[in-house]
Image (cartoon, rainbow, N blue to C red; front, side, top):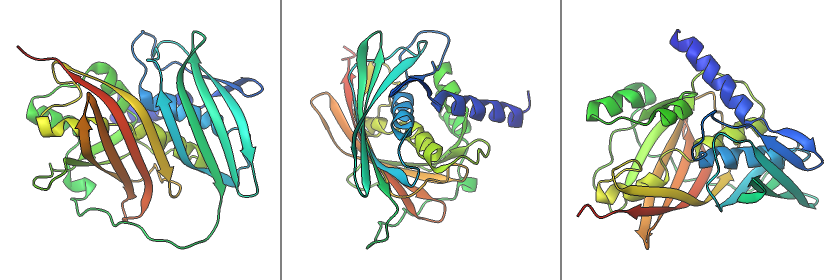
Amino acid sequence: MPMTETARIAVEELRNLLTVEEIDTGIFRGAASAEQPGRVYGGQVVAQALAAAARGVDPERQAHSLHAYFLRAGEAGRPIIYRVLPDFDGGSFSNRRVVAMQGGKPILNLAASFHRQEEGLSHAEPAPDVPTPEQCPDFREALAATGQRLPGFLLDRLAAFDMRPCPPVTGGALPRRQQWFRLARPLNEDAVMQRVILAYASDFALISTALMPQGLGFFSPGVTGASLDHAIWFHRTPPMDDWLLYAMDSPWSGHARGFARGAIYTRSGELVASVAQEGLLRVKSQA
């Protein structure tokens, strides 16, 4: 199958995965991501929960932040039920709480806030100086060059995206990584779905930044990891059809947890979102 057709199918499947179905008032069902059982990807649950939260909110109000706590590991082969509680609709803001459930048990709690468009004071940290996406290798080529292989399920998860890791950052006190990403083909979706897709992608590689000082990765032998909580602040609608730069760092890890931050920029250098995540990171001794 030609690569363009493969990309088209992968992007359409991603859109279908992140489009939740309303099955009763305030109750939504998110599709399963795989036919076989396995742990569900955290970014999928966050993104589907945001999609459910946005239903029924005035379209003039877009999500400006979300905060999520992962409670249990979900199963990839089963649909997820989302219950939305419409806590608040004020003059400028709306707030929604979402409980994601499988088998009658909550697997994630999420709160999202929506804000109408307003003008105000503005400033933003500039984007880091990195090579352009055309100067960076495809992530599959970069992995092959280092002799690494990703699990098949992860390659399936990334199939809807074109990803280009930037050269490793050396020196400095903080572990850092940067990568370009975009949808593998244009989708031309509305502002709600653009945010939902960004929420999905925001979980890529973020917490593994906290393993860099030890020379480890999320799939290194002996490493067990899982997201504990995840927060996103949307500063503007992210143009998911164009290149976005994900700049990540990790200021701390300890007590079997790691903390990482991310800033997402457009190709022209505009800051579109900020991300923070804490995750469980356990490493078995190799004695």
